[in-house]
Image 1 (cartoon, rainbow, N blue to C red):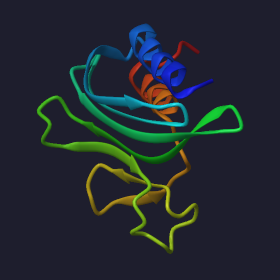
Image 2: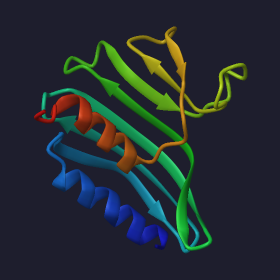
Image 3: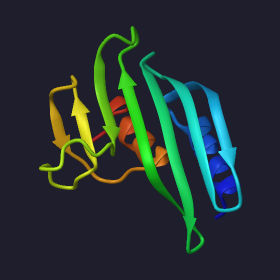
Length: 131
């Protein structure tokens, strides 16, 4: 999938998601071999998610290189989670991928994520499945 198709896939996933109420694209760029997306999403519970993702085309697939996905409460005062790969926690497993949970100082190991995977995770938290 090329970068233009990848951006289309991300936005289609947001439209289809039960966790996403609306979104606004702040910046979107795509060339033949790379792209960038920055967007602000209102979630179904009125929480706020800011997405920033830079990706490159490798062997026919778009691979996320740099990212920040910041999930805040509805007032945008309290951090719920922020997934990012800024290289400032070298001793954590999975470096540079990490998650800030509930506040800046509570940092846990993370894994590489795309915008689609983050929405999947948020859906799991906001829309509990029947058991």
